[in-house]
Image (cartoon, rainbow, N blue to C red; front, side):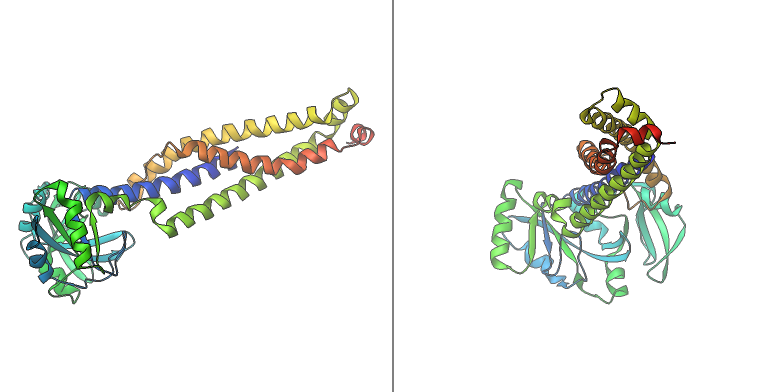
Length: 344
């Protein structure tokens, strides 16, 4: 039962982290307040690579019809899921109202940064703390409410110079004068700049799903395959041992007229009972893994409880268990009554 629970927990935790991390990315993107996202040709929904676009693109895009405002940012990976974002706070305030700073103040000096509350909790940071990123020491000037753009923010010009991308941008956010015209503006920009990745915010956030991220989808498939194998092996070993231990009892049942279907039914029902109990325990353990991820691991990993996957995980564990009970059941059905009764 515990092995089945681990199998279910493994599936639900992986799926929960995948959904949670992608949904958190989508929530931060929507929090920017932009209507259109403009990205370079080498980018994808989850990756920007370098900063290949000239900052002059901002003024060029602002001159387009129905574009009310444009703001560029530069993004630098810090390893794992963490990234630093360089931006102009005044422009960001015009676009979305700016960050909601909970403690401290906006950055002013070149070596100052803002971090969101989750990153601050993970790294045990407070206003005035020093943290080393990209081989530089940074001072935390403020902590802001999560859900907007990034977890770590610094001056645009500073990050550009630090990464050797002076005058370059990773992406540009656009605000249109009428939200209903967003798709029209995107269509026009795609015709003029066919090599660039241009999305409405709704389109962009819709790409942040498991089905849209090929490697993640494949990885989940591999984990599910491993889970089925684990379930198969565990149930097969457990039921095979049970059949051996009950050889005499099975012989007694057969001598009293029990049919092969009756004995098979007993084993299958016992297997299903183990799987159902293990699945329920696995679902409960998923809440435990979420608590651990919230309090003991990087804040960039967010786990959701994905209820639609409960029956899927249960179905996977049942399938593996039923496959695992086939050989023990066949052995029990084929036992000779005389040999079984004489078994010690």
